[in-house]
Length: 290
Length: 251
Image (cartoon, rainbow over all chains, first blue to last red; front, side, top):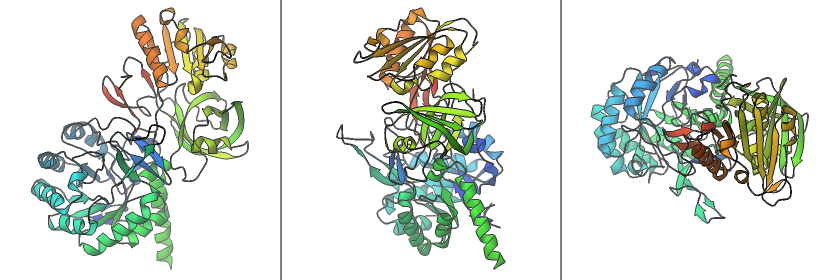
């Protein structure tokens, strides 16, 4: 009833586990049938393994949380060898989230990941706020974004979805620029650049000073950005930002999103995505009955 | 170990009592149990604060799990208001607990705790019964939760920083690693680092239960990582109990 299509890929429902909140789709399998999700975005991948950031990596805020993981991941070769074969047994589309330190790393990463059987869509991460490159560096100005999207487009053997940063100078212009550079879809928003200070030490909580804010705190702003972008581009828009309930999801779908991603809500309740799917199914059923 | 499948459930509060000024023992009704050193995510609020609080398993009874925790911030302040008859929501048991080995091995074991790090020690000591157990429990000032160890035949040495009870000083002042075959520790990182160093010097095996701020609690989000000799490990899913030699204590 909720079936949808994203870049030619059939999703049983429009609910996708957001990158960085769902590992490689294994951990939450102890709590629910992951095969019920519309799709899974992998933890952000880079060609070379990364150990991520040192120091505090998480901090709570009113109705939200900040994270500074810094793209810790085993590297794309290890992902392809160890994680992807197991992920494929889940039976749902896998969206590989790819970052990079420079354009060469993006190109080689996208080339290898998109060539793999079992990867349905590549989500290009130009919006991680927690690494200097690889990076939101490519997600702030349209020129930088265009350079990376243009570079990876020819080597990307699968649909290319560009994940946008709410920290972009102009997110609507950014979405249009990515579409023109060859993006098959855009997903938004990644986390908001934010910070916290320890008043006792008078120092920033995070070693990198700033971190990425997610959770219900950002939802109204994310919704506004999704609504603006959805009116400005012709490619599908995948919305995210603090979605916790089916009503939240419905807001994003009404604003123009083809599908939505859920991240932080899963930390609050492991089965949050199933509740959203069930809620949307009931809503669609009631709607159909009218 | 992960001997029990984790549950996500809303469960009744059976009892909740104050053990010391800001330390409480919360007992909930659940058959989900848990191994010594495993933990649960606990919450009794809707979405503010956003995240649940990771609390180690203090005790397990027939159809009950208890948590011993210290009020540290808003989450634990809200937990502290729970009364018998209320409900709270738990996810767990999670993580990998202490590796007990042969529980009747007749070995000399030490359980070295600092402050609220005493929380997992009760379930641990019970599981170790049959060994020659010494609990060395350090506190800043007020002493709590040490009496039950004696039920399991453990010798208890209390150490307080201000000398108000037991020996004045810190745990490591009275801990001679070479006296033991195996050591288990839980407490502040600097204390565990000293215990680990003493054990390493004496060639004694040491398992340490680490604490970290967590989000998912299941290994998916990587915000609770710790540095080990084999790279970053997840405190929630690879730990919280680690072989002390694995941990890079001053990372």
